[in-house]
Image 1 (cartoon, rainbow, N blue to C red):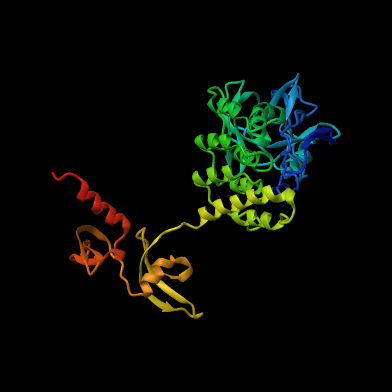
Image 2: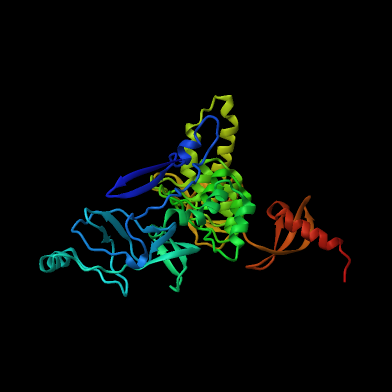
Length: 425
């Protein structure tokens, strides 16, 4: 991590840089199978305006320049004053510090357009000073994500009510003090630390907080293969469908890093296996892509291929539900010349036409031989006729009939035999 600084118009701008964010497609395809997430270390320097001595004496006028970057606080003897409800910037001019409006004014704060300044300067030769609403931050009480952007609930040191402020209104060192413990625990999959933070009463934590790549703690737990942390975060309300800036869900990450147990845990929690990333890939197609790219004849890759096979199987089972065919109702020849069967499903879903490959061989054989399937109520009697066993069966939809032993399921016969052996009441 490196802090990059630049001096522009008398103001020190700061940003932090780190390694490129992890991508499950590339990281999971390495021969070693090792993965590493870039560490979260926010910049701790503040963006400070060099001129004002106190919030009340901070003055402004407007220039006609409309391009800007966010600069949201200034320092007074080491104290951080953050803008409340409005993003502003400070620009060093020859004679004074100028603040420009970024968005509409809030109640009690008057803003003038550049044209107003020009008119007043023509008449009076100087602009009139206005007082800005800055406040000193006591601490951050909570965070939330609104329209994929982070906002913070601020406790101010003055009598101003607690207020939700966008991240760009708050100094980096203030947000870092709040954010760093969370992301350090998340990126290490530290279950105990995360639970402590989530249960803290003085500071509220958003389990769905996002980092600079739009990832949540659940993404990192999935990538690190920690089923324990995944279940913990889900218990506290983690969104299993949240997608990062590349469209990856936690299920994409778990599949890409080949963590079968985490894949199963996420599916059990309701994660959508059909959710696609920005390239149109579902977790299943991503895992299949990785499997195809993994060498088949390399002994060093055997374990990896086995693990990917397990991931693919788990995702496949989640996407395609297995339902038993209860009865074949009709047969027809499809447009492509392939036989199709109208089947009744065991889960009471609507009858549908399917191909033979979706039906059990024994059921197909019985249908082709003209055997009919029906539900047995119970077996009433047993007899031996011409050396063959037959059972008197009571059907749920019609009267009883004598049926050869082969036509009655072994479970029904076993139940009948057990009833004969039990003492009569």
